[in-house]
Image (tube, rainbow, N blue to C red; front, side, top):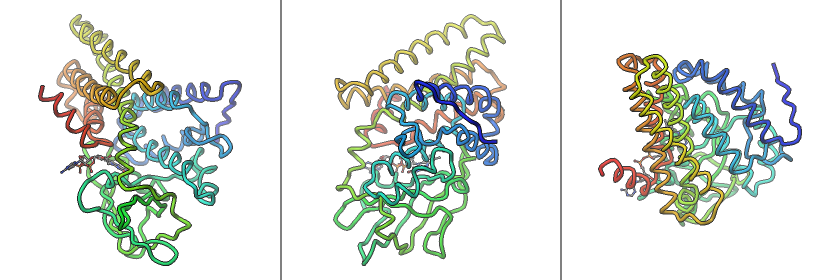
Length: 362
Ligand SMILES: Cc1cc2nc3c(=O)[nH]c(=O)nc-3n(C[C@H](O)[C@H](O)[C@H](O)COP(=O)(O)OP(=O)(O)OC[C@H]3O[C@@H](n4cnc5c(N)ncnc54)[C@H](O)[C@@H]3O)c2cc1C
């Protein structure tokens, strides 16, 4: 059933409310199933498409919701509160949309963008390898009419969900090339691995891919950027994945609150209050920091690490407050704890790794 979403005066606020209602009422009760079963995750993603929630950063002229930075980060925090698997998977598609919007390739924009909001076309990403240093894992060699791609993409979430993905590869002069390739493999030229057995968000069907002289035509190239652009991008956007971590912390706080109502132990409430205050403070500063120029990279890095730390502390507290039942793989505290681990490493850079370890070993 295609839902008709009426969008009156403030389209973005209405859509945010549509999203929050959907996550709270429909996603939260099945979050454990969504974490384990690709079919349940697929259904949840489809329902987001029915509500036009899959191109939030795409301009209206291409059928997107054109969310502001602030609204998009609110949305990100909200979805992570209810399901890590759904939050992570749809975020790959939203990032791909944003990437296509910022490309100069008009024909790819026309081919993809207007079909992304409702999920008629779903696109993943596979460029975390560009963050790694040393010999490039994925290389692009210029040939007549395009490029030959060779090497390995270590992480691509969404096999069986996404039609295509945006691959990142390094040119001989160090420039970064981004292009669109299929995610179903192709006659020995793109070999997709078996599904990874993951302790968290296993339902996202995460794979790696080996490229063997795959020809990427110039018409499939989204952009070519200067060497190590990914580092500047990661530095500029250091706060972004922190909003997932904060959503995860909120999910854990919900569990602690539930445990208090069940057990009526005042010290559970005390811990809840302290962690709640810290989470609110961190999120207020993070929202301030994404809208203001006054925060340095060092300050933003500190906030990102604090958001990671909150996800870790709150999810550990949720385990403790839930008691032995939290050991069950079906218990929400168990899932949220594992999701917190994911947010410790997703979109990790050398600086984030260093500061997270410093905070943990203080
Ligand atoms: C379940 C899951 C799904 C994922 N799905 C996707 C996806 O769909 N698309 C995608 O693009 N990515 C995806 N990722 C990748 C994710 O964002 C990476 O985990 C993250 O970028 C960390 O990189 P890595 O795992 O490659 O770690 P590592 O190789 O350990 O590197 C971590 C960081 O440390 C730095 N580093 C490592 N060694 C050195 C060194 N010797 N000197 C200096 N710096 C160093 C790296 O540059 C990197 O920034 C996924 C990850 C997970 C766990």
